[in-house]
Structure formats: structure tokens, C-alpha cells
Length: 89
Image (cartoon, rainbow, N blue to C red; front, side, top):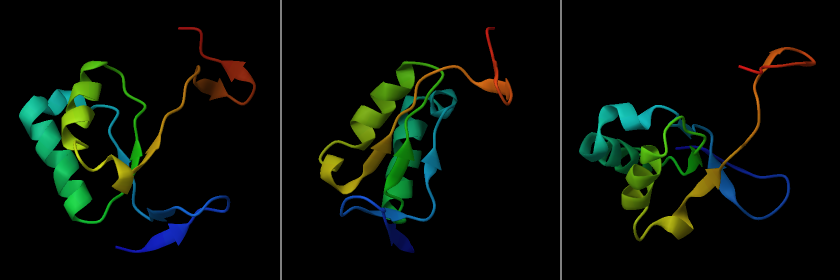
């Protein structure tokens, strides 16, 4: 896996990230195995923006004992339909 240093800080993150917005659809066990496989393959950058709170149970189990080896991203807010137009949906 190739890594890049973040512009601020000392973290090196994988050039491939894991976007798991629908990881909960895989089911608990398969979700945990999928996240752990990604870590084993060198992915250390995880976007935790999810559509269901049950995904956090999957991440909690998958990151057990590995929290210091992964970089987590979370974002909040409404999506944009067009520049300057908020989704109110």
C-alpha cells in the first residue's frame, strides 16, 4: 500500500480509503470481516459517515485493539444538490 503524509500533523494515510456508508447492509459479521480485511491490506483511512448507527457497532468491533493504527474521518451536515443549494429533504 502506498501512503502519503498529511499536510498538517505526522500521520501517514493510505492512498486508498474505506468509505463505509452502507457497511451495515453487509450484516455484523461480514462487516467486521470486511473492515479487518481492509486493515490487513494496508488501508488505514476510514470515512465513518454512515447512514445507520448500527455501523458503529461494526467499526467498534473491527477496530478493537487497532485504534492507534487507523485514521478516522467523520463529517456532518446536509448535502448539496447544486453549489449553494442545501438539501432539505
